[in-house]
Image (cartoon, rainbow over all chains, first blue to last red; front, side, top):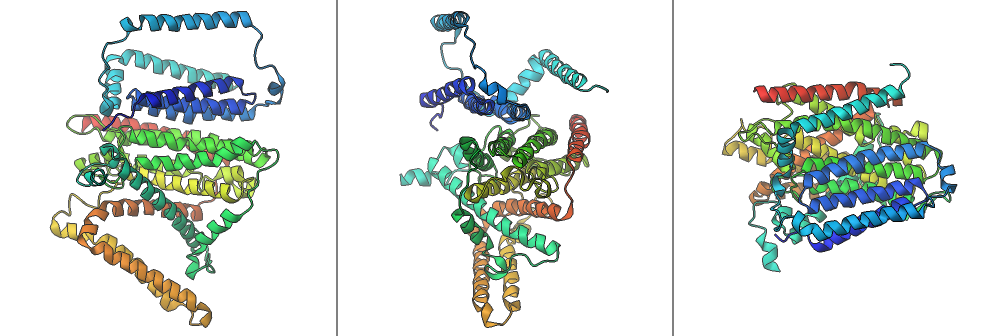
Length: 169
Length: 416
């Protein structure tokens, strides 16, 4: 079977991600921004698939595109956006923006130059058929402690949100 | 080229895994066509069954017993004027029905109609199904917002809240079924749809009856949540016609509205297939472990043909009972022709080569059909929930029970 993960698909998905990312910040209407963000997240899921990580792609779709973005849209529709459409979308802080952009670009260039030392020589053998099982073994075996701490942190955040939202408990 | 096409025939796997583009396309076309026909049949059946529940006749005018009504409806919808409200957000309004349609048809990629009769088998099958079908709520929300009108907006707000709430309980129920797949020698479970059915085959039990009553409770939770997830009565608050006119699709007409309906019915069939795959043994025939042997194999393989012959018999009784007035002559001839076609299909299904190949598909579809009938039954039986009751059921009843079942299933899996 010929590999699906060709360069063409990488550039297609990467291009889609970039275009939708730009649309997210340039659209005046918040709902349009959210929709562009959804498309960006979906094409990102496609990129995960190309890395032979189907589980991560599935979770990306189910959590970000299906869960979090629906909540975003829910909130956006509840709040009044008439005012924000008339406001300026960008701050006029050219100097800071330029500095940040140069710093980030420098970082990318540095990674690219040193890339040969950082990344392995040959392409890793992807275990597509047991990706989910391997992630499970990693999470519940090697990284059990970190995983439980992360879930505890999320639980605290949930309880905090409930406490802050409700006057009487 | 011909070699490429025939090379798949000997293989014992799905066309997607074999990487055969031709057969993948064939399967996709067959599934798409089959689902569209099933949606039309479901449309007719729903109106007819609801009518009989309420002691009415239902559609009777177009064709014998209204059999041609779905086709007449489709023609009407296609030729109707397509209106976009002046204040609507055109692009979002235009794309919303397409998103619902794509989301509900994409999930059919992984539905296993038989051990090799699926378009492909994904390692993350069930996760993919839940994820992609949860995208359809985006279409509902976009449709309601883009219409720029009050009723649709309220409908889509309700829809997003409802779907988020019931998705969690649904996910918990699914996880407890996936946990059961790991009860084999190697101790690793699977998310692949085909793998889940094979696990039930291996353990020689439907997950519905596994760790009784844990599997049953998880199944019931899923069965309730899937009705809420597809916006059907008694959870059809997003389109509650007595309060919100038509909810999120109030402003839609003609073709776009029919896309919504097509998407809704396709999603109903898709979630029913998830339930069948996870709990009711997928493509397996009843009692594959107790009623074994060649005789029983033969008996069960005759069922598809017998079903069609039975349908033909019902249609034929309809022919006999038709009024003998000249007005009804064409309808009588049409119904007789329909009965003859059904009988012919039934006879064709008795032929041994067809019989062996069609069995898995027949049992899968028969199980899904039961669920589809239940949908109609719910709609005829239960009054609509109030919104706060809906939220209460989702968060305070279903979710705690689902978590409890999940924990108990894990404990039972470790102990036994």
